[in-house]
Length: 66
Image 1 (tube, rainbow, N blue to C red):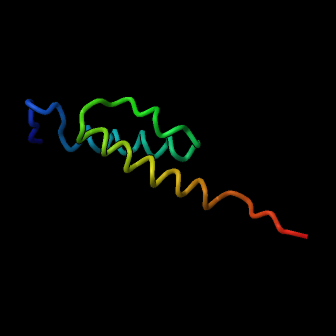
Image 2: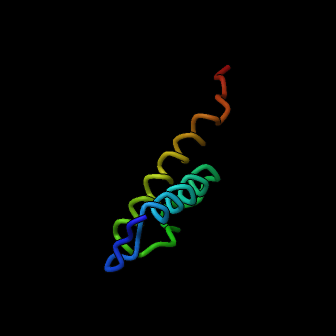
Image 3: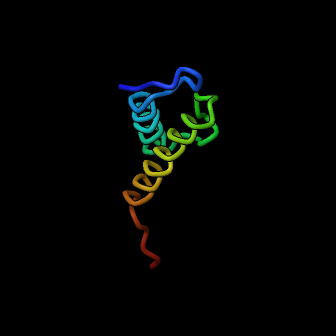
């Protein structure tokens, strides 16, 4: 697998960052808790976080107004 050593990421690391972000969003973690500093890999984590957070919100129970 090709890796751009100047940027410090490859497809595998981007996928891992996305998966970690997804789990963080699914658990309702704060978006500001991204553990990555690099722009590209942080964007992968944030994309995962958004997808996970959206999934989390879809599973919340809907309260009926009486």
